[in-house]
Length: 589
Image 1 (cartoon, rainbow, N blue to C red):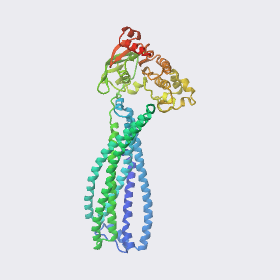
Image 2 (cartoon, helix red, strand yellow):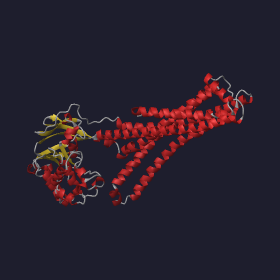
Image 3 (cartoon, helix red, strand yellow):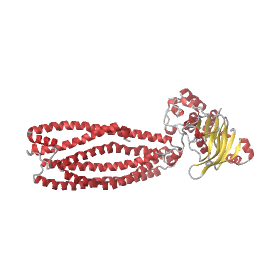
Image 4 (cartoon, rainbow, N blue to C red):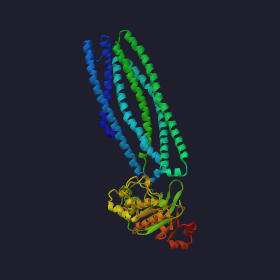
């Protein structure tokens, strides 16, 4: 994730390492302050230093104490001024890198979600997908902005202070480098537990998001059924479950700190005994010993932070795994690499089509044709497979057996975009977006001009209503168009379907949820929209389908009857019985 921004990361890393070096330099000033200025003694090391360091120590030992005090004071001011600039630089750059990565990652996830077929959405809850693009990405952001910067900075500090310790007593330094990695054993075990708990807690976030999505979008149902207390209790239960898992994870995380404190204390006491003996024997000056002890503790501190960073990365890895479930998902419905140009001059034909969502077959060997310029209607009980046929024609799914052709060409040989641009679709579930009316009608076709939008709305019998609004076509709709009536929403959906002037129109139970008045308005709009087009109508109402050129009767996934309205009534079969039953209920089919 960081690789595309390696120049920025390289600069940030240089700043972090410089900052760690400045920490080492500032700590090293303990030696001349303690030995020369305060104690009046020369600086002494137990081993021979490299020649350049020996010359520096000799110069300091020969300096006047008052002059050395002034020099160190000026040096401290300059050093910390540069250190402040460097620290600001790396923190700002690492935050910028993190924000860039999260921006790219969110865009990549969202783009992938747009490519995935409907079968993917049937396997995942909306709240779960939202959690992955918000909560999981937030975990990764923290791991990048804080984790990577700490990894480099604290790693730099370990390196700098290890060098200082090596210069003071290389034998002891080697022993320390053998002991310190032992801390990784409990940290690694705790990290694995944190990763598992993060997986579970992120799943609970998805549960909460799903519940919020359902209850907010379904607020009318909640209130109509007096289910407020029930939903409150459901939320409290899920929230408590998330709290419980989070606290289990936190308990593992905070365990690292006391473990490291005990380890640090043991190490400090051991070094105090060893170094104190060297000072008392005169082999080591107090300032050098203070530097050694401070450097040792300065190594333990970044090691302690690095152990916490390991836990952050375990959480981030859990989040990344959930995100890559989306990014690595293979779309089952794909555009062909070399698509054929779309043409529709003869017919749409289903050839022995079989389809199932899960276990049971929804369609079983369905074959029929939709001749160009004709209106073909599908009728049948709910669950007989009518809407599935519309979904297959749009390639929201692909059949497991058989094929669908347009003018003899399998629709899988057209590009998805080309196929869908030539089909207008009005579904039984009207989805409108929180945007202007004009943008809702022109949805998916940003280049459509106002004249064509109004033309489509006139055909859909909605232009007069929209024009009467204070802001007209610039009026904003609420979520899902909830500030419109059912008939108004449906007529806007019809306008949206026909604004691209499609040769093929699919009407999927477009009047099923409307009252009689709204139904009449929508029926008039549909009649106007169907003129001169090839239409596949899925409906329950006789008024919608009785004038169809061909009526297909679907039952349990199979076409059992076909013909005109009059021909099917004359057969006195399933269709006749369906009309009679619904007629006895006081309404049309």
